[in-house]
Length: 216
Image (cartoon, rainbow, N blue to C red; front, top):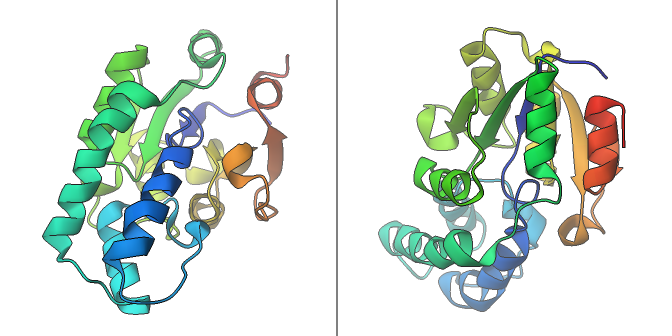
């Protein structure tokens, strides 16, 4: 699949943060911050944490204020992105080779810009043609398609001319609904999920490189 634009999700694709967010959800969000019920991780993975609160409050009830919820997420993010996560194998070379092929490279994420900046600076991912956060658009986030539609518009292309690399059910749904060619990136964190809404599923960085560049 040839495209002039590749839009990468960050969490669960570029960095292995989902395992840490899932642990945080098990230890605090699902254990203490909701009133009742047993949410599944895939219900909220891919959403912005502000929308996660709204969703959990509506579906399960919450025991904390939205401000307390946001503060807890921001506190957890400091060590998570600054110390714990590791970059996808071969990401630097993949980005470099995509740029060399004339492809625009972007990060499109539900994470706020300061979390994305930590990852960009720590792993030296720049230059990027666009970095778009769900906070930057005044529309509902994933699984709605707006963030990918906005990214395509910012880059001056149609969504159909973009490849999106996503790992979450919500993110894949957003990408597919935007009209972009959607690659589901499968790792340990989503090994058991149904990713069949995507146009293509890749297992790990080598298969992703082959899908994007036609080479191993």
